[in-house]
Image (tube, rainbow, N blue to C red):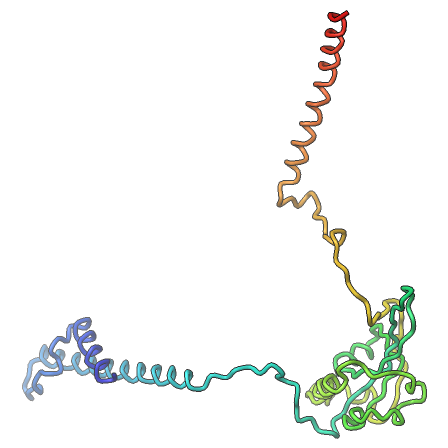
Length: 262
């Protein structure tokens, strides 16, 4: 394959650069003219370009074959099993949520959830949150689900869905450089903090079902008319005006018919 490519490139370079027959030319004699020396110099340059092109094609061909051999397929549960250290830093929060009962009324529900580094940074900056308290623990303590390490008012709370997976993901956010350098002192390890902007203005309903209907469609302002609604409305108004003009004429025709019939 490489030999065939080399012969093909040799012929194409020789034809395009005016170096036809350059490889078979004899060595330039010592006293050759300037024209002959220039001819042989051009031939050497063509051969050098030829070898470089063959090498580049060989590398690309080898690269293609290697890519065919090492195809990586994504697994369905990618990211489900990370080797997180049991001593990794993690922050847990007591979230005040709600659930809708059979009567359609909201009932209080408290959930223990892992908190990522950027979420706690937002809370520390004054952002509204439904977390009443937060506590920093080791990842191993969180995964054990031992409520004795938490404050007493956490005992009635339940752990969130996919707790282990979310705990590992949040623990990895605390291993980033920004979190290690700037956020670790918000809630030092083993401490509890509750001085956040706790608010229930926007209630978190865990079993909320979003039912979409036509009333949820955003009505575009008439000033941004991309569907020709203005033209359709004008045509409808013109048709209605024409019908109104025809009504008196129809009434007059009916009266004339009645008089003639009498």
